[in-house]
Image (cartoon, rainbow, N blue to C red; front, side, top):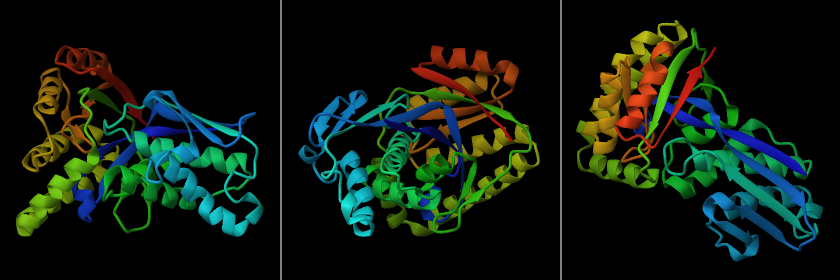
Length: 317
């Protein structure tokens, strides 16, 4: 048996604008993760057991564009050309892939990318075919296209490297240093919100008035650059106002929702230094910057305001 796991992630700043070439900041969230085990089995074929999505099926019964089927297919296509003896897993008698995850689906925490990364790592280990992070990241990005249509690539990148990432689409990956720990409370609306739809709607707005939205994206890009500087300098308390500004621009972009806005406002009333939606929007999660001593109180008040779940996470150097 071989196993692998991958963390969740949150976008601190820059979602949606990142699709249009502006920077974004994202960090891993290790409190939630996807886990994959690959085992030899007495049954013929490749069996996938993913109880979280009520799936127990043989690989060939899945459509080619099913994300799990696509991960496996994309993994084996280049492998088979390099090692004909390893063409697919049909040459191996019986393999079972067990997938579990504590990351809520369609919530902005990177559930799809985490499963892809963990699955690729487990397969790579099981077949003794080492892969670099760069290779793994590129493969996971191809699967993100199935999940999100025109993804930025930030989810698969921060999850693959499991480090804070300053990300600009099409540029070399840049990790960044955290000058001083800071604490984030994540509040889950409980509303499933596929990123693909929100990304598509923003694209429609952009097509209709590119000049207007390019200015909005520029403002978000400037916020991201300021936030990176504050984090690196250990001035994390000053991130709060930048979060509030970023959230206002995301509201203008129509990707927030009444539920997200309610949780953002509740966090601010509870004493958070700043708060914003995180991820694709229209549901999913929001994040609040808090002092460590107020984290539990903000978490409790978020639940009273309707959050289905909260996570307290610290971003460390």
